[in-house]
Length: 186
Image 1 (cartoon, rainbow, N blue to C red):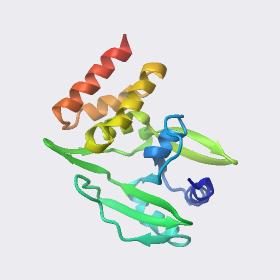
Image 2 (tube, helix red, strand yellow):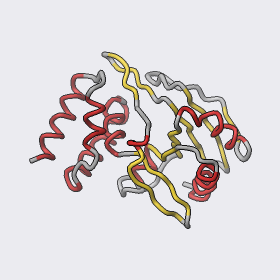
Image 3 (cartoon, rainbow, N blue to C red):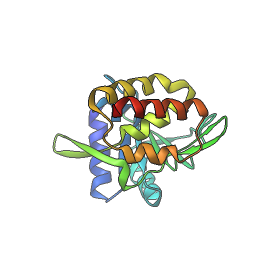
């Protein structure tokens, strides 16, 4: 994975006051859960999505890649910058057997940041990704990794889990989250 591309993007977004956070595999990577992230997932506030896409077009190739299958994401853009894949996402929604789960990206969801070569990189919450990965049928192993992390480090942002539980979730996902809450609160 090309950290230089991530640093380039972070500098541009930070300088232009974009509300964004690094999500998915890179958010897990900076917490020691994933060794080699596959791509860069940028979660962007809806009010900043147009500006973000314009900024990234200035140094990367926007590719055609519509969301697939159970993804009902309102804004999804796929860039290729120096052979690195970048997904730019806003209003992330997942269809499941009983409805739609929406990832609410707001100030609560930026819970951490890392400094890499003097560049601040905001990180989205593991608690949000835990629920998202459980809802994604093909990503439940990532949910397992986050559960193991919670067992060791605890759940730091319980309010995000509680917010997620207020939404429509598949019954098995809801039960798994509730069991996780019970086991980490003991």
